[in-house]
Image (cartoon, rainbow, N blue to C red; front, side, top):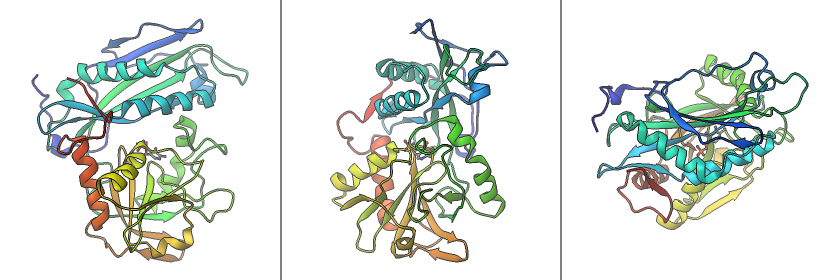
Amino acid sequence: MEKKNIDWGSIGFGYIPTDYRYVANFKDGKWDEGELTTDPNVVLNECACVFQYAQTVFEGMKAYTTEDGHIVTFRPDLNAERLANSARRLEMPVFPEDRFVDAVVKTIKANEAYVPPYGSGATLYVRPYMFGSNPVIGVKPADEYQFRILTTPVGPYFKGGAKPITIRVTDFDRAAPHGTGHIKAGLNYAMSLHAIMDAHRQGYDENMYLDSATRTKVEETGGANFIFVTKDGTVVTPKSNSILPSITRRSLIYVAEHYLGLKVEEREVYLDEVKDFAECGLCGTAAVISPVGKIVDHDKEIYFPSGMEEMGPTTKKLYETLTGIQMGRIEAPEGWIKVIE
Ligand SMILES: Cc1ncc(COP(=O)(O)O)c(C=O)c1O
């Protein structure tokens, strides 16, 4: 299969349309067959529930070209499960988890020419999503839904690639209503847009959100979970019911324990103890593991000993092992890699 003529090394994290997308519709209480289409446009009634009440959920995952030239995706069953949980929380019908995985595979395969080659630094981002599509004016869920999957080739999420970033502790909350932070729903991200732009205007790459009840515990950032490393090499990651259960973080915990023999603590992390960590990173499908060099908490600055030039040593080992598994250089745990072809 001939690849598209794209300068893979120079693309950022933006939308580049590909040839095919997947569409399935829910009507009269059931999902239709679903199909691939070339039409990137969605035409909806002006009163569609998604426009009025933001009834929309989504997922984010990637397709990679491995060292030996296969196209693979990483733990799609976990994205299927998380989308189902998000849908239930917004009173939407679940798109069956096995059909989700099949549809993802089909969509990636149809867009094979857009899966960046091994070693290019780019990947194919896969965005499954679902929204309430029929007109609704009283506050209630829609009766009809559309599930779609779009794909777009992407480069690094943060400008500057692997250089450590600077984040600030923000006074805003990430999630919209309490208790929705653990799902991937449009409303949570709409509510984070102002905080993100405000952080950028003030010269920061991202926000560190705190728990909204006590404002003393570390939650996550706008699009990634936190990983910290203590001075004696223990990996620490915040435990909270209101952060998105990151698939990357769950995978890194396993990698740290089973591949690197590190001790891992998943526990509440207080803002007060952040200054004592040796390393800090953001983890997620888009961020992979992005090192954090500095955190600004209002008038206090925290610099991690790993500095502003490079990833810390433990972060680097985690990064190399995880990406090694995803790109087929390191043997994956059973069931983590779904081969597309
Ligand atoms: C708010 C938030 N937290 C964490 C993550 C990381 O999750 P994952 O590793 O499953 O991509 C994301 C990524 O989409 C996110 O949007």
